[in-house]
Image (cartoon, helix red, strand yellow):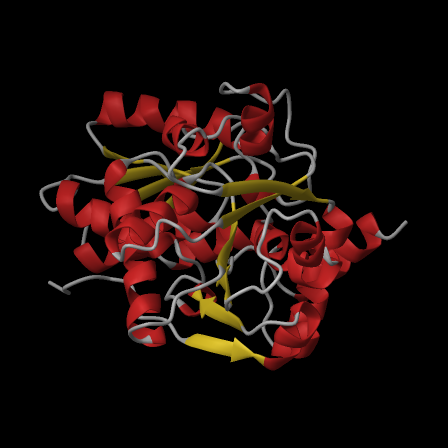
Length: 322
C-alpha cells in the first residue's frame, strides 16, 4: 500500500503576484494533486486510518472531497458512494463516475447531502468520510506546511498565509501545520466569498452561526456552519487569524487573472484565496496595521478545485458580469 496518496506539490514563486503586493509571493500548488485539490491529503490519511477493513466509504461533498474519497477508495480497492447536492456541476458527476464511484444527488446544499451520507453510513455499515470536520483530516492537511518549511529551507518563514475557508478543514490543517513547524506567530488570512461566509459570520458573532442559505457562486465554499475547531482557533490569543471577505466578482476576477498570468485554472473557492493579492486587500491590511508594513514572503495556498472547466468559467462570467 502506498505510504500516502498525496503528492509533495511544487512551491512556486510568482513574479507577477509579487509585483502586485510588493513582497515575494510563493504559491503552494495543491491544484496539482491527483484529484486537483488539497483534499486528498486529509482524506487519504483518514481512509488509511479508518477504512482499510471497510466494506465501502461514503462521502458527502460539493465536489473536491468526493473526488478525493473516490480516488482513494479506488486505490484501496473499496467501493465509494459519493452524495452530492444538486448545486454541484454536471462535470463532477461524470468525473466521480469515471473514478468508479456511485453518485447520489440529494438536496440543494452540502448540508442536505451530508444528512443522507450519515444515514447511509448508519444503515449500510459504510465508513463515513467527512469532508472537513475530523482531526485525522486536519492532520493529513498539515503535511502541506511541513513541505513548505522544507522547500523554503531553514531561517525562512512566511510573513503571512492566505487560505480559503469553506467548512474550515484546510484552515484547521494549516494551523496544525504551523504548530508542527513552530510558525504559530505567522498571521493567517482566512478568505471567504460573500454569501458563503460561515466562518466570518461566526467570528463576528463570537459564536457558531448557521447561514440560511449559500448564495455565493463559490459552491465549494458552501457549508452553512463552519467546523467548531476552526471557530475555536479564531478565539485563540496565540494565533492571528484575519477573517476577510471578497465578492464573487472579485473571486472570479482572481480566477481569470491567475489563469492569464500563471496559466492555471482554479475554481471560485480558490479564487477567494487569490483575490486579496489582486484586489489590494493585502495592502489595505498593511495600511490598517493588521499586517506588518514590511511583509515577509506571502504564502498562498492554491487549493485548486476540480469543478471548473472553460464552459463553467464562461457560465460564471455571464452570470456575474451583468
